[in-house]
Length: 443
Ligand SMILES: NC(=O)c1ccc[n+]([C@@H]2O[C@H](COP(=O)([O-])OP(=O)(O)OC[C@H]3O[C@@H](n4cnc5c(N)ncnc54)[C@H](O)[C@@H]3O)[C@@H](O)[C@H]2O)c1
Image (cartoon, rainbow, N blue to C red; front, top):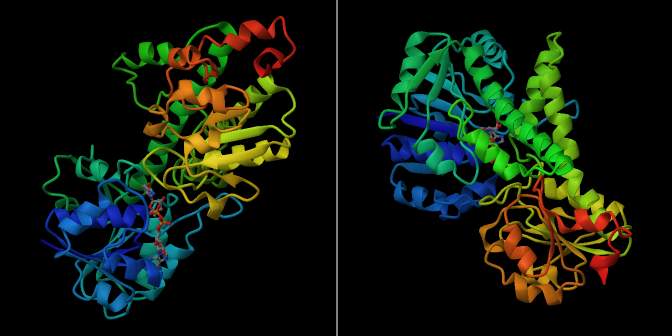
C-alpha cells in the first residue's frame, strides 16, 4: 500500500482521496483554505455529496488533512493534483492553482510520481515535466490520471469506475499509478500523456454533445407534435446508442461540462482548428437554458410584476454545486423581464449566490402566490409535493418543467397548465390558437 499526498480538498480531491484510502492506501489531503482543513479534521464535509461523509469516517485511520506542504509530501510515493482549473475570462483553463502546487514542491523530494487529476488542456503534462526538469526534480515522475466522477454519484463513480485512464512519460510510472487502483473492478488503460489529457476533454464534450443533441430533438418535437421522452427511449434502447445522457431539459451546467467543452473548443482554436460541432453544442446549450422564460411568457405574456418560482438551484440533484448552474441564468433572465423571482433549493444556500431574488425555505412556500413555477433541478421531493392542494395556493397554476421530471398526467389532473421540454401534449398549444397568450390560464 502507498502513501499518497493529495492537493485540493474539493469534489474531485476529497472523493478520490477518500476512495483511495478505502482501497487501503494512506492518504494526506492538503488544502490551502484553513477553515476547510479544520472542518475536515472535525469531521465536517465542506459540500453536499451523498455517501462522502460516511466514506471519510470509515477511513479516518488512513486519511488526514493538512495545510502544510511538508506534512503532505514527506514520505509520499505519489502526489495527486486535484486543484480547481476554472476558466479564465478568455475561456481557457486557469492553471494558476496547478502551477502554485508545482512551485511550492520542496527541492529535497524523494522519488515520487506527480499525478495530474485536475482537468487540464492537452500539453499541460509536457509543460509540467519541463518545469520539474528545469528545477532538477528528475526524481519526480509524471502521470496524467483524469477523473471521471460526476457530482451527486461521485463515490459510486470512483469505486465502480468504468475504467482508469493513465498517461505517462515512463511506463513504470503509468504502471505504478494503475496499480494504486487494485481492488477496483475496472480496466486500466495506459497511453501517452497528451492522449490521456484528451480522453477527459473528449469524453465530456461527447456527453455534452448528446445532451445538446437530444435538446434540439426536443425543440423539434415541440414543433411537430412528437414526444421527446418516447423518442429518447426508442433511441436509447438501440445498443449502439444507449440511454445515458439522452434526457431532454434545460441543458447542462456544473463545474465540468461547460468549462471542459469550452477548453476543447479553445484548445482546437488555439491550435488552428475550428471545432464546429463543439461550438454548436455550446450555443445550443446557451439558448436551451433560456427556453423556460419564453415558455412562461407564452402563457403569461409580459412578465413585469409576475411572480416566478424557481424550484431547485443546484445544477443537478444531489449536489449543492451551483457553478454554471442554469438557475443563475434563469434568475437573471426572469429578473430582466421584470418578474419577481422566488427561489427554493433543499441544499443550496441561495442567499449567498442570488441577488434580487427572494429565498423560500420550502417548495410549498415558493409556490404560494406564484404566477408560474419552473422546475430547474430534478430534486426527488418535487415529485412528492401535494400538487393538487398546492394549486389553490398559486396565483396561477402554471408549471414549466425544465427537467421533464414531473408526470404530465398527474399535473394536468391536479389542474395545472403543465409544459415540459419537448413533451408532446401541452393544453396551451391548443388554446394558443384561439386565445390571447395566457388569458384563459390567468382566469
Ligand atoms: N467536480 C467534479 O465533479 C470533477 C469531476 C472530474 C474532474 N474534476 C476536475 O478536478 C479539478 C478540481 O475540481 P473540483 O470540483 O474538485 O474543484 P474545487 O474548487 O471543488 O476544489 C479545489 C480545491 O483545491 C484547493 N486548492 C487551491 N489551490 C491549492 C493548492 N495550491 N494546494 C492545495 N489545494 C489547493 C481549493 O481550496 C479547493 O478546496 C478540476 O480540474 C476539475 O475540472 C472535477
